[in-house]
Image 1 (cartoon, helix red, strand yellow):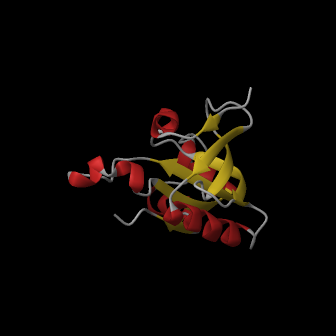
Image 2 (image 1 turned 90 degrees about the horizontal axis):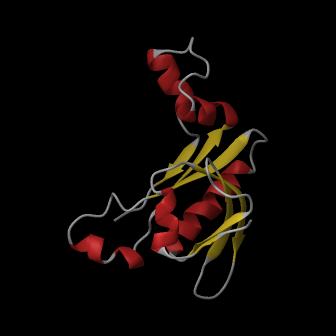
Image 3 (image 1 turned 135 degrees about the vertical axis):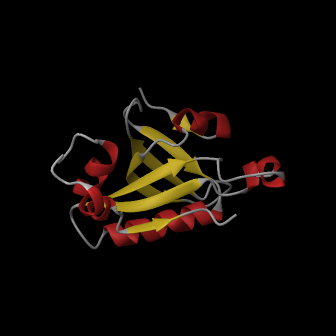
Length: 138
């Protein structure tokens, strides 16, 4: 069953959860882009609509970075936690995506604590780091 995420209430079901973006397509109109996502408890073929220009630009930059290597993933996290005070009221008009490019191994390290248990401390921290990350500037 496919699902389309359009409104904040649709996206909020995946608040602060890492989602792998398998397809990115810029579009013209009210929505600036669409993404196909995968993740835990995400129905196959789920598509999300991206309305904010900054979110669409961050995704375009991430896919350009992803193209530089075969073992890379674009990962997004939808959240309104960075919005405080009056900005919370303006949430529908502000960017909400944190976008990152990870190697497959670094993504596994971040999402599965039991993966590669021999890596500890600073070595694990360095191995978990994304190649690049874009956060909302609000």
